[in-house]
Image (cartoon, rainbow, N blue to C red):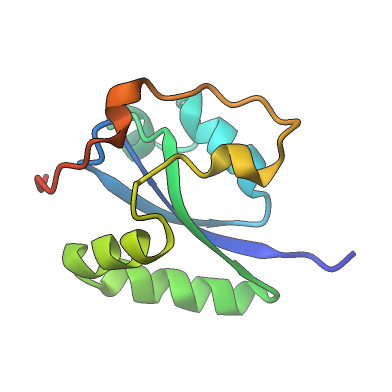
Length: 116
């Protein structure tokens, strides 16, 4: 089986903070973020909801794409998310229905464009 690389965007429950990352195991990485592992930023701002991801066949392609997304404005990131996920639903459950993810509370669907 060929390895895949993922570029992803996660947010907090109120959709006010965006985090862009890269991994070769998206399910594991989402679990780590939800449990507060993997970095000060993600644990401090409680990054728990997967709202966007892309799949790439080569690591260098995913790295280049991550840099492109990170260099973009917040407005561009919001547009990217809203094209794939207009209701800002948590996409983690669709990765594998057998993997248990903690569900965000109902108010997590409300979007707030507040900046940090």
